[in-house]
Image (cartoon, rainbow, N blue to C red; front, side):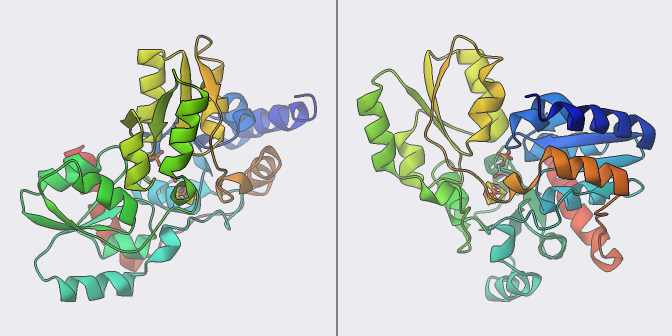
Length: 302
Ligand code: 13P
Ligand code: SF4
């Protein structure tokens, strides 16, 4: 990638100068994932690892809720996001007021909130979850009924794996809601030996049509452990590109969608972020303690 090389060199230099690290979600493009990141992972791993970062500055190569979670968990660090507009359709689907109204409508029902939400929403919640631990978190509460918000598809997929009654919200991931079971069936016709892995933000009929469903880290582990000859990752496109070189015996059949929010982060704005120390992510102190408690409860139960 000759055009990228000067940016990579400059980012590596600036990371030393600023005593900074780059945390990258598994959906970042492979130049970021392989060349400039210090820690990569799914939402759960990024949250777990953010706590132990000792560097002064953390650049989040991911979306805004991930940067906020990092700031919540390691508040003494300067947390930067290269583009503050890197949002998420799930985080945008619900407000703190919506959660307060749900609590009034369903008194006594615990509220489990996906980490793909704002700090305000987390502060109104009892506990958070990620796609990697949602079933475990729901069952850890020892109750018959929970609200699992805001992703209605994650909620439906969790409901299929537990006896706990799951109430939800109308949020959807704009990347995963576009996949259909028909697409999976067509893929199987064209590639009879393909192993299909689907993210739990996909509609339930897609997850049912797949061979395995799990978080982005779950999918990566599945490929490296099971070594399928042909695999289709029903998720964001960058995932397959990132792990292809580590799995030379597996062919990656493309059937993926791009996340426009993740795509806002690139080598140029990571470089600029480190140069200018922008855009700093802050958390409203009036919300921070309650939001941190919901995330911490999740980490303790994971
Ligand atoms: P995970 O990496 O936790 O599976 O989440 C996927 C996602 O959509 C993050 O925005
Ligand atoms: Fe949000 Fe979906 Fe993009 Fe993840 S992939 S950041 S859930 S819109």
